[in-house]
Every structure is written in structure tokens, then in C-alpha cells.
Amino acid sequence: MARRYDSRTTIFSPEGRLYQVEYAMEAISHAGTVIGILSKDGIVLAAERQATSALLEQSLGSEKIYEMNDNVVAGVAGLTADANILINQSRMIAQRYLLRYGSPIPVEQLVRRLCDLKQGYTQFGGLRPFGVSFLCAGWDSAFGFQLYQSDPAGNYSSWKAACIGENSGNAQSILKQEYKDDEGDERAAGTSMEMDDAMRLACLVLSKTIDTAKLTSEKLEFATITLKGGKPHIDVLSSAEIDGVLKKYEAVLKPSDS
Image (cartoon, rainbow, N blue to C red; front, side):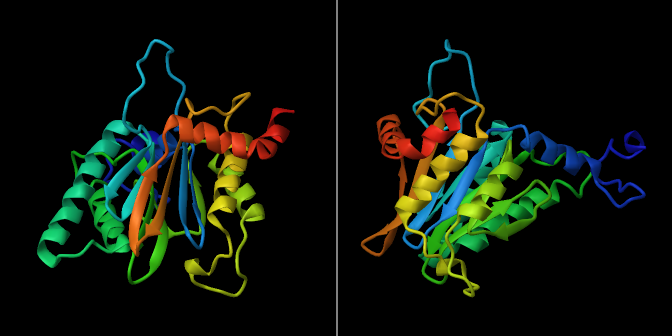
């Protein structure tokens, strides 16, 4: 039945499904894991690099984590080529806003503009959905630290802890059990988790969801967004810094080796 309705993104099946969009989401489920965790002092993004040949020269830049603006950083899961297009578009959107209003673009507004673009590629003939999902971490003066997840359909939602990519279901279950939250507080900023706790939890989730004997800096990327002097500061960790983080939380990682 699906074959009759999956040739175009503009054709609904009798069940009301858009198969091309679902196929794009399926592609994301086979991509490297990306985790975002909100704390009261900032946000941690952690990502898994997919295994490649030992002969491939390592890129100097980041493969899974990108800076979209001075106040927004994103982790991507899916087709890297599609992600590059959307990252460039998001940077243009942010710079146009800065040029017009003289202030950084609000985090949700940037995410919404990006999702509007992604949604357009599901509605017009001759196009295909972007096969990439984002975890966007940012800060603005109105709502503080925020973490958003978007999908190929153009939907987005706000999270305190989220995961996209391979084994996202298992990771989400661990995050739900381990995440420290202030019960009864409806705002994301109501979390009681410290940055160290968020980094520890990210290491724990990665150790239980990535199919590897030992976590190393060659397989991982980390980034944080915090406040310094009242302004957002994005720090993409180097390989040496990632090794330091893994060594610091070695006790957390040991159970996964058994």
C-alpha cells in the first residue's frame, strides 16, 4: 500500500500519513546519537561521531555540533549535507535579525524560522524533506536557557533533556529516570541540575547507548553554552578536554563495560 503513496511528499495515504517524511525520520534513527541536557547554569550537548575509516584524516572542525549564532549552538543527526544547508540558512537568519534590530535573535524565533523552511519542503512538489533533526541549545534575555528539538516535518518542541539519532528511545528512558528536576515548576529553568551533573548524565547515557567497548574523544563531541559576564558563551570541547571529561566521570562509565 505504501508504494502507491510514497513517490511524492505532497500525497497523503488513506491513513493520513506522508511516507516521505516518515522515511526521512527513519534515516535520522540510524544516525549518530545526539544528547542535550538543560541545567540551571547552562546546557550540555554531546554527540556520537559515526565510525569511519582509520585512513580518513580527522576534520579540524566539528562534525556533529555547529554554532548557529553567538547565543545558539546545535547538534545534528541525519544527513550532514542537508544539515550544512540548514545551518547556513540559520546563520543568515540570525545575522539579518542582528542587522535589523541590533540584538541577538531570540532562540525560539530562530528555531521557528528554521522549521518553517523545513516544513516548506514537505508541501511542494519536486522537493524532498531535509533528512536531519536538530537539538538547538541557546540563551536569550527573555527566557534564559532553552533546549529545542526539531524534526524533518518542521515540528519543534522544548525539552529539559532530549536525544535524537540511534537508540534515542533507550537514551530518553535513561534521561527520564536520572534527570533531576524541580517538581511542580512548569518552566524549563526550574531544573535543579548543575552543569557537572548534566555532563555526568551525558556521559552515562552515551556509555549505555553507544555500541563500543570504551568511550574515547575520537568518537565523541561535546559543547556547552553558559553565561560569562551576563553574555552567552559557547564552548566546543577539544579532544584533550573530552578526554579530561571522560576521565573525570570514569566511575560512571565503568558499569557499561561489564
